Amino acid sequence: MSISRSKVAAGLAIAGILTLTFGIIIVFVGPMIIDDQIVKNVEINPKNDLSYTMWKDIPVPFFMSVYFFHVLNPSEILVGEKPMLEQRGPYVYKEYRQKDNITFHANKTVSYREYRQYHFMRNMSVGNESDVVTIPNMLVLGASVMMENMPHALRVLMSATFKAFGEGAFLTKPVGELMWGYDSKLVDFLNTFLPGMLPASGKFGLFAEFNNSNTGLFTVFTGQDDIRKVHKVDSWNGLKEVNYWNSKQCNMINGTAGQMWPPFMTTESTLPFYSPDACRSMELVFERPGMMEGIPVYRFVAPTTLFANGSVYPPNEGFCPCRQSGLLNVSSCRQHSPVFISHPHFYNADPVLRNFVLGLDPTEHDHGLFIDIHPVTGVPMNVSIRLQLNLYIKQVEGITETGEISEVMMPMIWFEERGYIDGPVLKTFYTNLVVLPAVMEYMQYIFIGLGLLTIIGAIVLHLHNKKNVSEKAKMPRPNTDPRTSAIEKDPLLPDGPD
Image (cartoon, rainbow, N blue to C red; front, side):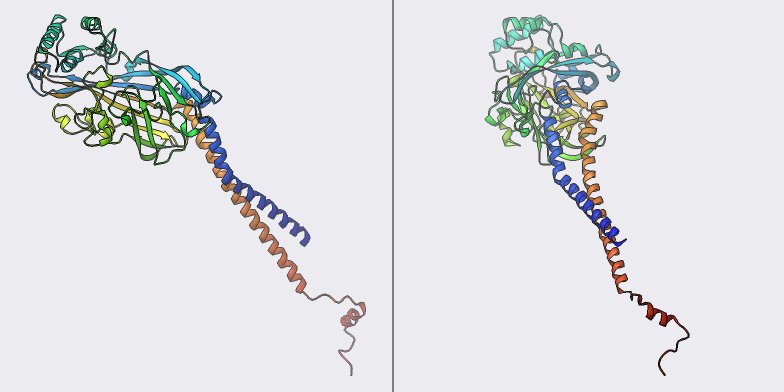
């Protein structure tokens, strides 16, 4: 029996050592296997069905919500009173994005154009596209500021042109026309006699150039030779940098195209990206960790310095001429029209901007932008990008349409582009990138635990067996001599000699 127990103990010890060794190997090799799988699935490669499909055709709902600042007192503004604004919206559009003209290059980059389409969602909107709102007339007020330093005679001529075409300082039109364009004889006239002055050649609308358009020719790294470069922009429209701004740093094209980022992020990481609509690179910073449907995420937000002016944040000096902090002057890439971008309701901007108009109430919850990203893969899980379009307006001598308008940064609209991973894509993402790595992590502890328990069991069995053998060895051996046994057992014999 003792030999049998010894063999069992030895077998358990060997099994325990092997199990423990396997568990320890998983501790070191498991993360490497997981990371290798992530690298293979994150790189831009047509062989990767899940990630390539997500990159090529965004498979999740993406919406643009638009809010108009309806002007309540246009007549009073013309005599110098403070504008009174009322937010109208949201008017929601489902956004479809699809990459086309995809071309892979030998230097591990890929070029593409991304096309955008918008479809109105009545069930998600506050009203119809036929709703009428009043906003500043960019054609009149924008052109007036642009002509401020031109000869007086030209300004008078422009004012006469506005009158001839019946254009005033404010515009009252349906939402759909303001968004996607309306026929304007003034636009036709200006495009004929002053070509290049306006960004639009057909109908004039705030988003006329967005629908059925593309964001330019992007060339990005595939990550097949270096995963740290995946999605990063190599060039945009053939350019390594733009020429809209006044410093090399501000003209740099940094980061990705704004849809995915390289994997293996830390809390020290940032989210740099180039935005053709803003004509510049931007960078979001880490705010806090969180969870979304059981998936760990990092939340990145806009730093307060994003739209700060040069006096507040010297690196932004190249984006000037600047006005109050919190405004980005995009006139240099908008045909010199006095257009400025900010956060909605002048959130994170100089408070003085809100003193010039009535009806604004900025909050972080409603007006701050954020991206929740899965740090291990660099895939955004929940996105909300919110920006506001503002028009700088003022009285311009010689152009009577500007009346006695006070100098003011006038909010026109703000919009939110939002989307989140949901449905089958979320389930697949959760299974492949959360459940499987977790199972492998638990497996290493299970194997280590089983190995240790088996080894301990073997040791206990061995010690118990050794103790039994020792105790048996100490016991007196029985007398095996038959004569001595017989005498000892005969009760009739005397105890000893006389």
